Image 1 (cartoon, one colour):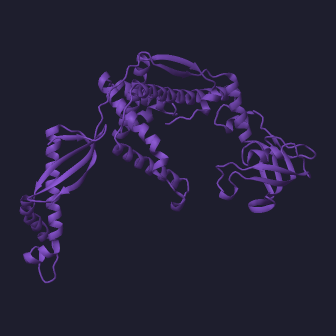
Image 2 (cartoon, one colour; image 1 turned 90 degrees about the vertical axis):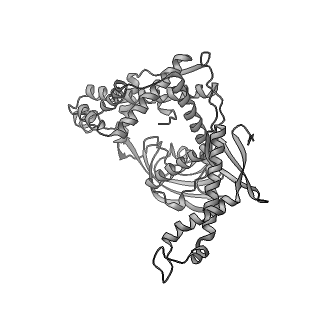
Length: 434
């Protein structure tokens, strides 16, 4: 029978199933149930036929019908050379006469056609670390280990630890969580809402004032979303931030054995460069795959997207549980993941075709290079290499990484690559998918 094209990827095919054949196979199905039937007063497999029919007749008929459904459907797939995705939906359209007539609806895999990249401009980000980037990182390390000393008569500023009393009201009415006494926090670290912190800045111990604080629409408390509260704030204490000096003793606490500033700066720069390189590689990959997607429009099967959504939801749920979320706090929906899932499926199909068309493979040496790069972060790279290659799954992961890099490089080679210089700060702010 002919295959009906419902949409770009949806198909429908009709076929007949003989009632006589189904009935003839019911007996075979009943024999299977008879072997396991547990009937009081009879040993397994010895129950009378009529009792087995009463107990399992409906299930046996359903099994026989499903067996014929699957057989006839597979015959249609073979005849029409159809590459289906997911499971078909069977609808009974007629049961008149000696045959059932079924309609099977299903999706097929799309034909993947890659577009031309020759005229496509693809940005490849670059970054050159500066001494300032190293200094900024050292400052961060010092601030993380800062102490605070109570100071009299000084105005609070970012980095200072303040202790306050506060009382918040919305439309003149107090609300839950809007009151505290002797509450300590460090200004400039985002512990409080921006308007709140701005209001505290410049205040001295003993001072009080009212501060208007706007709650964002995304605020976690429903009763405060988008509202403006007036907080009466009293500063009880201001403790000024004191950063540790770069003494040999302090440098050693940062893991630098010889305690010298020079070694500290060298180690920090190496670590920063490693992280920058990693982020640049990921961003370059994302830009390359985005370019491939833009020149290769592709409609993907909803069944594949649906499966990807469930994988993403499962991973997200497991991560949230590890972070301490309880089951009733995890409210994930398909809509949250649909866009990313569709993009993931699209890129997977495009990359598979790109690899096939360009005969891309990863050699043993290229896989080893990937592992060596990872090993360079460890104190004893040789031990890491030996450990890594002991596990087949780890080796397959390294091979996938090598293939990913070769696909990225190949796309840039075919396209109009454009290097774009970025600062360290911008590189670290980038949203990257590992």
